[in-house]
Every structure is written in C-alpha cells, then in structure tokens.
Amino acid sequence: MTRRKHHFFLQNAESTNVIEVGKPLYKSIKGRWRDDYFTNENPLILELACGKGEYTVGLAQAFPDKNFIGVDIKGDRIARGSKIAQTLGLSNVAFLRTDINYLEEFFDEGEVNEIWITFPDPQPRPKQEKHRLTHPRFLAVYKRLLKPGGSLHLKTDNPELFAYSLEQVKGTGCYDLQSTTDLYQSNLNRIHIGIKTKYEEMFFNKGFTINYLQCKMGAVL
Image 1 (cartoon, rainbow, N blue to C red):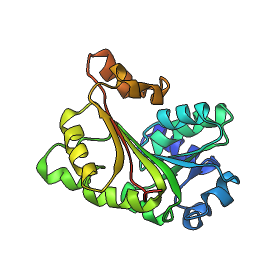
Image 2 (image 1 turned 120 degrees about the horizontal axis):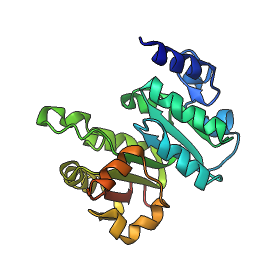
Image 3 (image 1 turned 90 degrees about the vertical axis):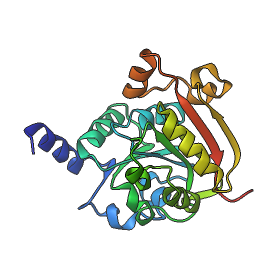
Image 4 (image 1 turned 60 degrees about the vertical axis):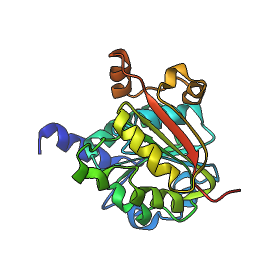
C-alpha cells in the first residue's frame, strides 16, 4: 500500500460519515439508516459505484431535505468525497464502503427511495455481463430495496451499455420509463441541475453525448 493510500484509509477510519468494516454501525445499520445515522425521516438516496462522491455531494448540496449515501469499495476514492462533505458541513451525506454485491446486507426491503448509477464500468465483454450494474440480478436487488414508487436513474457515455440497460430495465416490469441518448439536449436535463462528475465533464468536453434513463421500479403506488 502506498503512503498516500494509507493516509486515505486512516482518514476513513476517523471519519464519522464513512461506514466500513470495523465500525459499530457496519453490522447494525441495515434498516436503521434514518434512526441511527441521519436521525430524520427524510428520503434515502443511494449512488452506486460513487467513486469520489462528486454526484453524492452535489445532490446533497442541492437537496438538504434528503439523505444521500455513496457506495463504493474503493477506500481512497470514498475518502475524498467524505472530506469534501465534511468541509461543506453536509450532515445529509454518508459513504458506505462495501462491494455492491452485498447491498442487501446494509439496506432493508423498501428502505430506499432512489438509486443512482452514474458512469459505471461498462464491463463490455460477454463474460463480464453478470458484473454490469444493470444486469438482471442487480435490478432484482434494486427492486426489493426500493420503496413503492421508488426510482432508478442511470447515466452513461457508453451506448452499448445504455442499450443493454434499457432492454434489461424493461424486463423488470418497471413503469414511467423515460430515456434519452443526448441528455443535455433533452428536457430531462432539468433533473440533473448541472451536476457533472469529473469523468462526465471529460466525456462531454470531448463531444460524447450522455445517455440517461429513469424509471420507477418499486411496487406501483
């Protein structure tokens, strides 16, 4: 481990807004995020594979009446988002360091209001399909975790992943599906209030269009 990474891991260990192995809430937080961490009844929004937490923090700033949790396995990335959230004094942000395969160990059925997937690894090879975050096995988990009427959002610059994701989402029995292959020229852009991750800014500046979909996956209200 490099000295820089070691610094980030020490930072996570000391940060109250990072939940990871070795901390008391890590084993007891399931179903209790509102009671034991946020201490309010506000909506709960996840960003999966959040990286440095740019989207998590941006949304938390824009919507102080909602709770945001960035989920990622990379401790050095989470540490950066954690520090920014603390510097900004955001009490509606948490970071969970875990593999996304284990989401159901940390969230109860119907506990989540929205799930965001922003620029995930497209896992392009056929043998990697089961690792795509819009694979049916993941979509089934999201559907269980979402409250009735809960929403799923996906942003990606990868047209192949987007086409695949649209097909898979339609197979889940989702409803109110909206999508675009050019977000910034779409009326759906208003939902994003100008937040861009570092990679999104890079893709956008290179002339790539941004694909976006949203749908409701929880039970019909």
